Image (cartoon, rainbow, N blue to C red; front, side):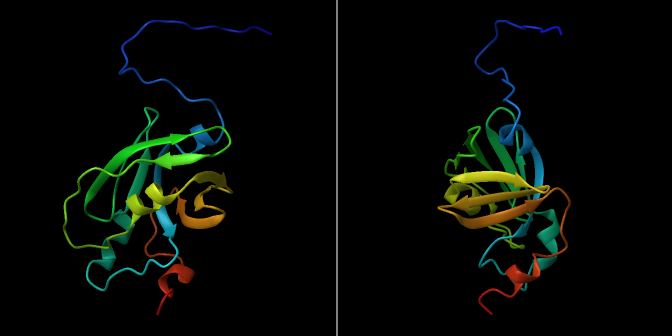
Length: 146
């Protein structure tokens, strides 16, 4: 069995790969599926499939609520402990207004279960995300508070 050790110097801006596990599993683009209490507005609901969250190796995330750009910083530990800072400024066009930034900012735990990203706060799910675009929120989410 051979092992390879790689060392080098670089700037502070250089991307540092994260360890395998939940930290690597969340990398890439996710599409909202189930956000408790979220009901798409009548106007702009067709933009739901455009809502995304993309986690990058450098500890930043970018995304959209369906038409407005969003982004910020995040941290995740090997045990799934998660935090995301306040999102940066966003445009204010009318669309599905999926509260991805709010879900990220309010979550303290992340896990990938059966191909689904599950974010939570104190054991209560704040959002579920899939790797493929969804036409509409899960049936349980779309009937919430109606």
